[in-house]
Amino acid sequence: MSGFFDNVDWADIGRATLDTLAMLGGSLILTIAIGIPLGVLLFLTSSRQFSANRIANGVIGTIVNILRSIPFIILLIVMIPLTVLLVGTSLGVAGAIPPLVVGAAPFYARLVETALREVDRTTIEASQAMGATTFQTVTRTLLPEAMSGLIAGATVTAVALVSFTAMAGVVGAGGLGDLAIRYGYQRFQTDVMIVTVALLVVMVQLIQTAGDRLAAHYNRR
Image 1 (tube, helix red, strand yellow):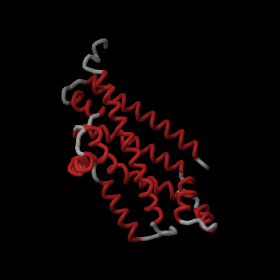
Image 2: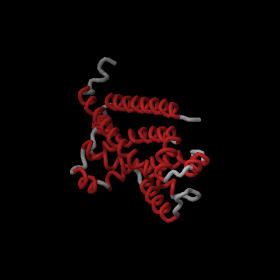
Image 3: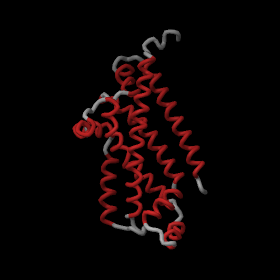
Image 4: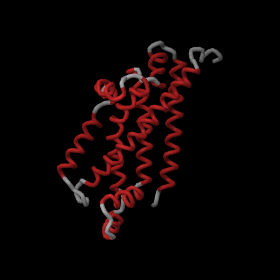
């Protein structure tokens, strides 16, 4: 075992870990920023809601479903021209963030919609009876009441993004996935593969634990 990790360059592992965290952090922030309004729109325009709009809900829902149905590895390749247009490159951390967001935001939007549906309808009706506008109902009633579900959804999305960042290594995005592919797979360096996979597993465990505790803290039931 003393020579088992001879192929592992710990400096490269450290840089790859930071790259993965940068991709995860940047894409998660943008995913939440886009996913929450999108999920709110899906909820408000659905049937039996106070802003029900069948056409708008159908259009938004179709777009969300189409984006969710595209495998992420294909989305990475298809989005290369748009990614270059947005950030100037399709490589590295910056080049990975646009497809990560496009792949994860629709997924999170559906989780947001599900969390909002769990809010007691009488609470929403009471807010409206007191004269609250749609914006006030959303910001002061819906989102606070659904906070636990929103955090749980963000946790699930963050875990999915970790796996997405690993796949992004296929197109040169960097991070632990890139090391696992270039050294662990293409050069048959099993020790590098084991280290990168172990770090990804630890990352997922930490995210899940932190998310579960936050969700439990905000749970109003």
